[in-house]
Image 1: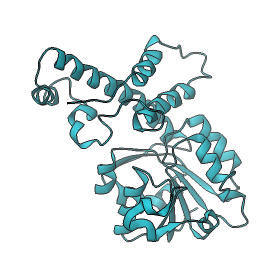
Image 2: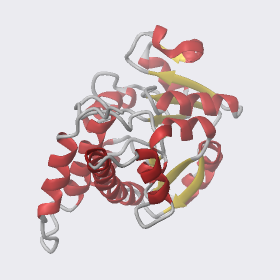
Image 3: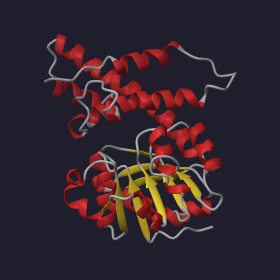
Image 4: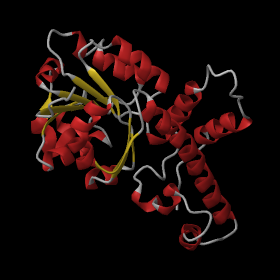
Length: 276
């Protein structure tokens, strides 16, 4: 079953969602935004923001970039209750990073005529602005194919990975590795400063050597690279993503826990703001 993409509402117009909405608008899509924050925080895009969640019903697609499972439930069923109304979008695209087990539960809770696509993305806000995100997609192939113009507007690397939950499974495993990379790079920079090593020179060497990483190579382009841990900021999202990966394997008796799991979480939580 295909889905029309005539009207899109993007819910969660934060650091990633707002540049995504702007990119879709510039690409010619009819796109609205929805967020619980005041309109004054959305600059030029404020004129496209919906203040009443009931108006989301007029969209063909709801693209969710809200942060947590709780916020997703609020959007779909509780506080905003998009899918508890008489009229609702016929496709829900979840681009938040959440537990794959949550996605499977969400699929069973939606109305039977709503198509769920898990479409987590990788990349910083600058990649969203440039349409250079990477997407990991899970869901019915014919539905994904119908939505492909949206993903092609927003991303350069697009992976169709299988049925519902497959995209999210790949994403949380990827982000487990990404979190380890973030804390390793920040730890390496701390070592370098203590040893009077020039950070820019170190980054140049690492980028051309086995220490190359997405995070280290793009350190100056990533808005949150210098953040310390706070549950409400992007470093806090890293904690959530690691927990989502661990939740995905929590019921697998053959998968053994590792001290590395708790070490990564502890290291993320101990990050302090990076000062030059």
